[in-house]
Image (cartoon, rainbow over all chains, first blue to last red; front, top):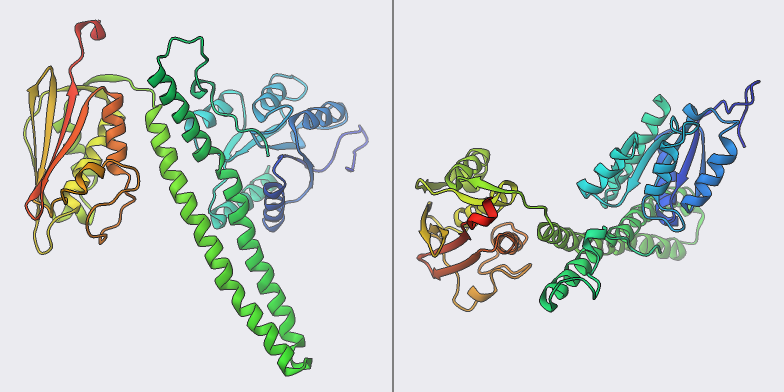
Length: 144
Length: 274
């Protein structure tokens, strides 16, 4: 799936999209592409799948090149649990985590920052703002 | 769809907790309000997003068809053009309906948040809060065209953010609904009544019809002529804030003469202060 260097580490940026709502996932992917995102996007629909993937990849992967775009409300293992697991594991804590949630409740967003997320975004309902937010995120990810 | 997850503090109380029946029902209503307003945002994002995506797809189809239209039979080309011309209107209706629903949800969500806001009461001077609001709103047309005078007031025991919002709502209402061709004059005073502070906001506005008076605190209700912008939620928010402070809010009004809004906030007992 990825290009590896001679020490077996992933060379290019790996974007992991954790989103159980297929419609949202599609809209996010479309706008990441429109924003000019460089790198692969791998999509998972629950937190357990994300942790399994990160667990199997973490030896080979360079965590600095990995970004998880994380929805909070997911089955099996929710976004808070994924965030907590990633940020409390020394082998994974440098993976960037961007929380993308429907809520704009300041308490919930603060809880994400308290758990160590790098950025917490509210998905705007109004689509022009939604598209702008995701396209700007694509540029920020490229600059990382 | 994932089962909505409300914060634990908002979950309906179990039968074994100490809540009485009205409190339990109130907790359940607040939970329901939260679920409705919070978790419906997800489907709204999908709907709104794909309506706009569909519009972009229709534009792409139109562009592609432009090239082949001259090669088609004229009647067929006309059918295609007519069908494509319908699309913006159809999507406009869907988009508008989604926006309208979302706007209702946003207002309900705000009400739900107000009802579960963590209140940190302290002694506050309502006249100072009013002065802050007047300074903040100095640029707004509604306030520019109003004459507001406030008397010195006794401190009230309230949450600062909540008191600010409460005063903002009542002051804006008092200034906004003035009579045509007349300057809004608003007088705010306070007195000590029944172990609490009674704040009286009096305006010379157009007044509220007697039949509408019992309904003015209901969500989305707007009395009188609809010639000013508003969401019909201000006084509902105000009532919610006053309720959570254990106070009372009521209104007296005369058509074409003005309205008096009364806010009574209880003073805390010595136990509450210690």
